[in-house]
Length: 189
Image (spheres, rainbow, N blue to C red):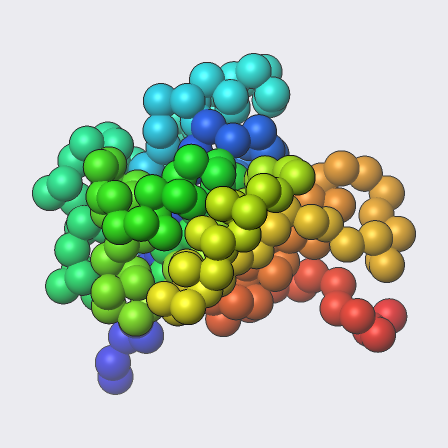
């Protein structure tokens, strides 16, 4: 009997506003034993998390966390065999570095590895409004095989609270990564 291989994903958390998206995703991943999770946070991500969420709960997750400068992490190499890298929330500056191949941190290196290995890269962009440079960077990433998933929640299921609203975005992340979830789908009751 062979063991089922876990889905291996990396999570990059930047200092863009929207730490609740990262927290909600991590909270949901705790409940998914079929997924192996690696995390890298920028220094600003920690500051924004503490400012917006009023806690340091990012320290309490049972996942493997890597320092932003740890280029010996499995996230820095395509040979580690992970399946996807999700940047949530993704700042415009991080998106620009990824779009232009600037691997100046573990986070941007992991994204670059995804693109070069033709693996799933999902950027949950938390920038508004967009300028032409943002749009051109989104085009570059899309043409290179990445997915731009703006943090644009859906309202058709009439969310009752902010967590339910945020989950409409994390549900899309899970769907894109082929990770089972119980999120509401259009047309489903």
